[in-house]
Image (tube, rainbow, N blue to C red; front, side, top):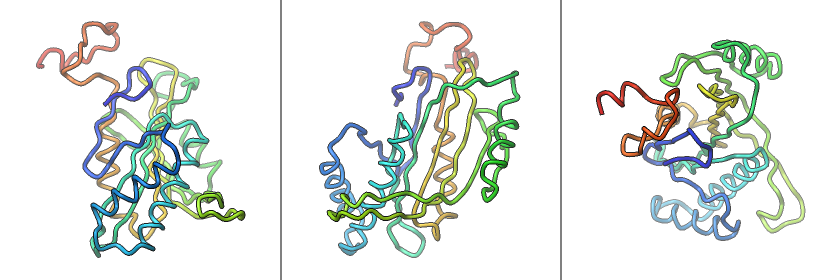
Amino acid sequence: MATDTPSLWLSLPDGFTSVDLTEDLGDRMERMADGLDAVFVDATPEQKLSLVVAAEAALQAQLREGAVHLSACVARASDGEPVLGMFTLFVRPEELGPPGSYPQRVAEQLAAAWPEADVGVLELPLGRTAVAVRDVPVPVPGAIYGVPESTATTVRQTEFLIAHPWSPHVVAAVFTTEQVEYWEEWLSAVAAAVDGISFHPPRDEARDDLPPEQWDKIRKAFG
């Protein structure tokens, strides 16, 4: 699938379902609850409510930050528990500086801004990428529960910051989950989602209409 941002495509792994960001809140929560009924028939009503509320709280926080794509991630942990995460893409205009300098520079900035986070630079198929993992407090509006008071929850978040190869933008791929105890079980799925990000169209889309600097020459030669 293509996101709303030009020159960015996303292929999702199993368990990741795109969310309609324009959908009515009540309809979205009802649809998610129906989806949980289909996937986790033995989950208790309390478990389902907790998962749906946590998902909506995370979604609202992401929308406030300008998300362009969001996927609900549902899986069953090794102990049988249903677990939920969110995978979000942001595209932000940003001055990238000299070629190749962005990942290390932003990693140093994040380490200074978030001293409690694990920050580093990874070599990924998309290129060198700054990565940060940290625990983040997220407000939960009371309206979600039907009460006047708001509360807060804590989610664990991993953020991949990738410089766009031919425009002054940064792609931020962010995965969050409230169920921190299952963090390790999410890592392979998150890696697959990040690997699914591409700056080139799928092979069944017309590439000759793109400017030469955006051609994927390897796929163009070998089909």
